[in-house]
Image 1: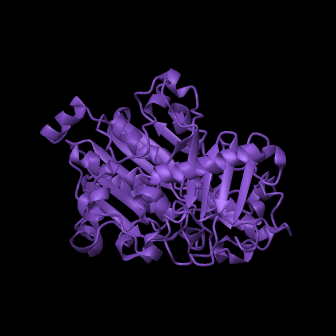
Image 2 (image 1 turned 90 degrees about the vertical axis):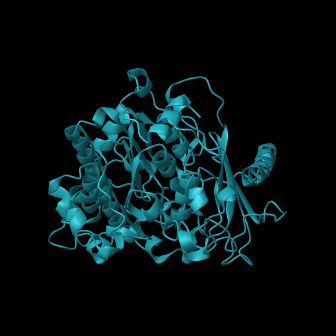
Image 3 (image 1 turned 60 degrees about the vertical axis):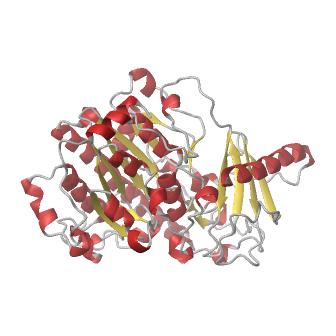
Amino acid sequence: MRIFSLLCLSLNFCFSAPNVIYIKSDDQRFDSLSMTGHPVAKTPHIDKLAKEGVFFTQAFITSPVCGPSRANTFSGQWERKNRIGFSKYLGNIMTAETFDQSWLRRLKEAGYFTGYIGKNHVTVGAGENQNYIDKSVDFSYLKKGHIGFHLSKNPAFQHLKHETQVEGLLEATEAFLSPSDENDYFFDSAHASVKDFLKRRDADKPFAISINFNLPHAASIGGMGSKESDPEFYKTLYNDQLDNFPIPDDFLSSEQRLPENVFHTNELQKYYVYKSKKQLLDTMVKMARANYAIDLFVGALRQQLVDMGVAENTIIVFASDHGLILGEKNLGGKTFLYDDSIHIPLIVYSPTFSTEQTQNDVDQLVVGQDIPATILDLCEVEIPESYQGKSMLPLIEQKPTEWRDDIFLENLFTHQEYPRMEAVRSKEWKYIRYFSKEHDRGKYLPLASIEGEKPIYEELYNLSTDPEEKSNLTGLKEHAEILNQYRKRCQDLVKELAQ
C-alpha cells in the first residue's frame, strides 16, 4: 500500500486528497455527443470536459445490460468472474464483501465522505446486510431499478423542488456538495425511506460521489415534456432539425439479421421495437434531449465546484453503462455484442493533468472494469487484488506499459429472449458466438461454454473495413485461419476470466 493510503487510513482523512465525482448515464451511445459526430446533438459541456481531460476513443462495456454493467464496475471484474448477473430476474446478489472492494468503499475506508445518487440496478447485501449500499456510504439517495422521467412518482424523491430526473438529481447533488442552511429543506423533509441515509457532508474530508442517471434509457423518456412544468427544451429542442437525425440504412430491412433459432426481431422488448421511421425518430429526439439535459448538468456541476473553491482538486469521470442499438441491423435494445451497444463515451478529467496529457485522445482498448482501478490510482489508494480491470493512468500519462490487445465480451442474460453470447474484439477484428436457447431460458449458465457447450452460430467482422459490422465473414475460406484464431482466443479468455 502506498504511503498516501497509509496516511489516509491512520488519520482517517487527508486534506490534500482529490475529490471524486463519477457521472454515469444510461444507454448513452458513443456517437451521441457533438464531439463524436452526432449531426444534431448539442453537448458543449461534456465536449469541454473531454477537451480539458482525457477522452477514450476505444472504451467498451463487456456486459451491455444495466445490472451486469454496474456490477462489473463495482467489482472491477468481468461477469464471468463475479457471476452477479441481472438480480431483478435471477436473484443474484452482490455480497457486502464484494461491494467493500468497490471504489466507493475503498475511498470511504481511506477517509472520504461518500455518496451514491440516482439509479441502482444491483442488489447489494442480503439478510443482516440487506440494502448494504444505503448502510455503507454516507449519503445514499437512490432507487432500485428504473427511476422514471418524473421523480415525484417515487416517495423518496417527492420533497425535491424539481420534478424532472436530471434537474432533481442535480438538486440532490448540490445538497450533497453544499450542506448549507439553504439546503436544510432537502435533509429535513426527506422521506423516511431515505432520511436515515442522508448525512450532511463533513467539509474536513475529501468527498467521493457516484451520480447515476436513468437517462437516456427508453424506460425514462416516456413522460418527457408531458407536464407544463417540464423545461421547454424537453418539448421542443431539435424540432427544427428532425431531418438531420441519422436513420440507419438497414432500418426496417426485410432481411432477418440472425437465424431464427438464435434470435428473431419479433422477440425484442416492446420499447425497443420501432415499427416506423416516425417512431424511431421520436425515440432518437427524446434521447438527444435527455443527453442535452445531462450536458447541462455537467456544466452546472462544474460551476458549483468553482463557486465552492474545490474545482482545482476534483476529479470527474464521465461514462455510460453501455450503448444501444437504434434500428441498426434491423434490431434494437442492448445485450447484443455489436459496437452499437458496447461502445461508450468515457472521459477522465483531473485538474492535475498536464496540457500534453490532455492534447491527445487515448485509443487503446479499455473497459468499464478499468474505471474503478483508475479512480483509486488517481487517489493513490491501493487497488484490490480482486480487480481484473487495470488502471488507465499509465495510458493517460503516456508512459510505456503493457496493455491488452483485445477484450472479451459476454451476455449471460437469458430473459427477454436474448441469446447467450460471447465475443472477442480487437481493434481490427470481432468474433461473436451464440448458444442455443432451447434449454437455457431463465437460467444462469456462466460455465456452459467452459464445460464444452458448442455455439450454434458465429460471426466474424473485419472492423477496419466494415466498422458497421454488416458482412459476416465466417463462411469465406480466405478468413478460415483468422476465424480459428479468434475461436481459440475466445475460449482461452472465457476460461482465464472465470478464474
